[in-house]
Image (tube, rainbow, N blue to C red; front, side, top):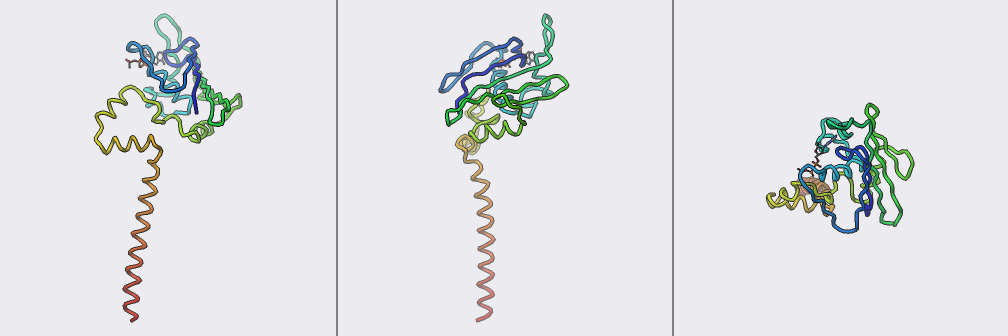
Length: 193
Ligand code: ATP
């Protein structure tokens, strides 16, 4: 999946409608402290269905709505629209909007959908709000400072093989059970001789 455009309105510090084009390849966001770099990455996570306000550095989900400044009143809603192209080359337009007191609503290509549908759409494309492809500030330092086992776990998550470990553990448990049964069978057979 290739994300190629992001539109924000009333989302955190992006009070005025803003539109960003995202070119193919690796994208980095640079700018002075507090200019909204992290807010941009959070907007991508949010439109992909992020449900944890904490991971959006917010107390409650409505905190993503522009809260106002000494010179500007607060907004009543926040909206993020993500334009992407899926692996089949089809256009995907996902919208999430939150209104004060009314919660979030999602649309995919103009149709109202549930949060779950949006999360599944991105999961099927091996991406989503928790994708390691979204590298937030501090994440790189975390990778550098990580112990080898932690770093390996991060790489395995990125490679999409983390789930295989769970299945391997299950399989090993079953194998041990089967070996114990076989040993018992051997004992029983020996008793019959
Ligand atoms: P740094 O490099 O210091 O981490 P940054 O460029 O990543 O900064 P962000 O953390 O994305 O910046 O943006 C922080 C700014 O967003 C702050 O000025 C904060 O006041 C503003 N902000 C966050 N939430 C809201 C909101 N709901 N309403 C208005 N402004 C907000």
